[in-house]
Amino acid sequence: MDDTRKRNYLRPLDWRQGRVDMTHGSGGRASAQLVDELFLRAFDNDWLRSLNDQACFLVSSGRMVAATDSHVVSPLFFPGGDIGCLSVHGTINDVAMAGAKPLYLTAGFILEEGFPLSDLRRIVDSMAAAAREAGVAVIAGDTKVVEQGKGDGVFITTTGIGVVPEGVHISGDQARPGDRILLSGTIGDHGVAIMSLREDLRFGTTVASDTAALHGLVATMVEAVPDIHCLRDPTRGGLATTLNEIARQSGVGMRIREAPIPVLPQVKAACEFLGLDPLYVANEGKLVAICPPEVAERLLAVMRAHPLGADAAIIGEVVDDNHHFVEMETAFGGWRMVDWLTGEQLPRIC
Image 1 (tube, rainbow, N blue to C red):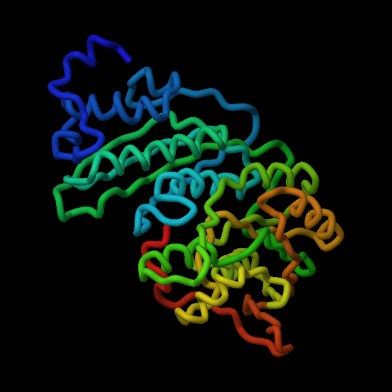
Image 2 (cartoon, rainbow, N blue to C red; image 1 turned 90 degrees about the vertical axis):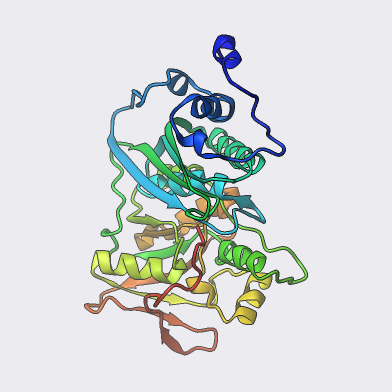
């Protein structure tokens, strides 16, 4: 950082007791100080250091992918993560579900007046660590401050840019009758972690969010099995909503089996206690893959060989159905409809 600019600041930021005030969003000296001493320090790279209102970047050949996601999770900090790393993982995963390699992120912050600077730095540091671990640079951003009582601490919007390699065509409208449906791991972890913290529930063991960047797993899958038809991360609305979305996009039906769907015992117990169905509970580090039947076992083996797919399972198949229904064979041998989520089961979950 330029020492001359640093000397021009009226007072140092108090990272222990200080709070966000309206001047931090005014565009003046306090705003510049927050950018210099927080965002530039955490996300340091050539694009940000130029201090332009935009970033110019190079991309490799292939089709471009862009995804935008806003994050309003409450509480901001939870077992296994926080709104910072979640905002990085969520957008990276949206880009990756096209089979793309994520390259860059932008970030927009809406801060509430009075928000502790110590919490803000903790969130930004978490974002920076998640981006570095994923090999993705945060190259542009914006910060606004709203009056106390007109926000809820901090909201974060992230936009991701990526590139799809030549020959890869993955989309939610590509599922075909006979395709197999694969799930990368246990469901419901994130939603139960959030709800347990909100309600101060104890289940004998900590339920941690599964928030994670999935692009490494996706890259391994695509390299081994280029003929993947669909990928989707089952976030809000959980596995059930995701399958209904793909069924509608592709004009097909789906039949899944309850028995192979992995659910942690503590998550199952929590859902029973709270009256929730794990199929509808949010996830932040899992994916659904749909592929032709002849490559399903090979794809399953590839997924299980990756740390983020160790509990992967084949959970069902795509069928021809003009009604686009999703049905599930229960553990007792009967069948039930797995319909769209009605209402908001768990608000402010991501």
